[in-house]
Length: 407
Image (cartoon, rainbow, N blue to C red; front, top):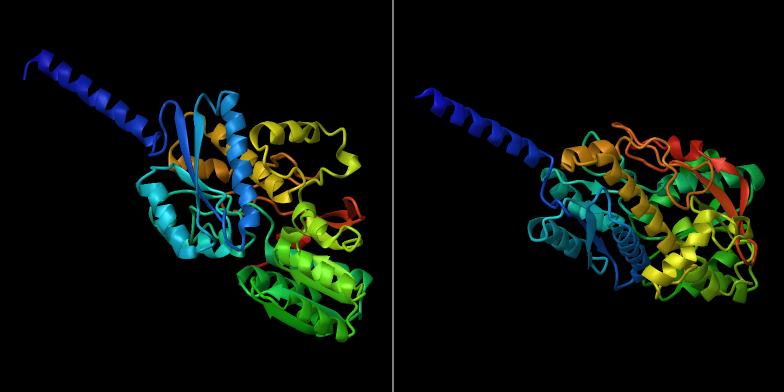
């Protein structure tokens, strides 16, 4: 081969190598102008109230895109309705990967659906980020290095209620009404773990199906037990039914309501705000009805955001606030990626969040991750409803969230 031929060959090899490097930083779902993100949500069915999470996420990315996108790229958020069906979630997720060519999945809702797709996404080495579920399963980077949670765990939430009971109501009789699924079992398990020897004070627990027609009857039975404390784990519409039923029976126990159900729009208003007075829950997000946040810059942005990008949404809906905050965290990861939008780098950046103050997180609560820490939010605080807003009880709690050991 002539000297000229060798030079041409060397140039071709060099250009090919550069092209390969470029490809490695541009996995499917990424172009010069776009990043495609996949999501499944229960927009219909028994859990449709949580569809507001996906709608708020879509609205957030619309806002980001109008402002120029992320590092010059617009986000195309592709979200489908799985009707809370795990098999549908798997089919839709396969479609997101194989037909829509998404870079990653983000914020899909629910424990059963996310468990159904976890193996597929990890085998394909596709990020399954900021799962909208408090299961412990999402913090297992050794076995599932492509899956990461976002919110605090359900078991840890149960332990927070246990710690509160131990501190203020030791020796009081407890009853528990919990949704008969993995979420409900996790929270109930955390409550028992946190109570330790005091778990003997749980005199009755009732597991109910999400579509149970006899919640009023369950509440009547629990009242007759003579219990002083009622712990409820479920969805907002069922929480509303239980709060109303207790009020109708003139039963006023210390009422603890899981964070997922503690929606002013979704449960307290339908139950009657007067009936919800004194209810206790946990939170890691601000209650924008609280006058304490009236002058907060983020609070001032919330109503204009909702009016412009999600006008049909309820401004008091905590699910919408959850979606906004989670999307803000996802956007931060993509910003940290710069121009290296390989799936490997997306996971590296997701595991390199250091005290990131995502929108609407309460003071003292940040997002932090590491290569061996896939639990971004580890803190929360107890709150109590005063008839209008959620008021804090005590300080932000960390140990109850960080010391839950996976079995």
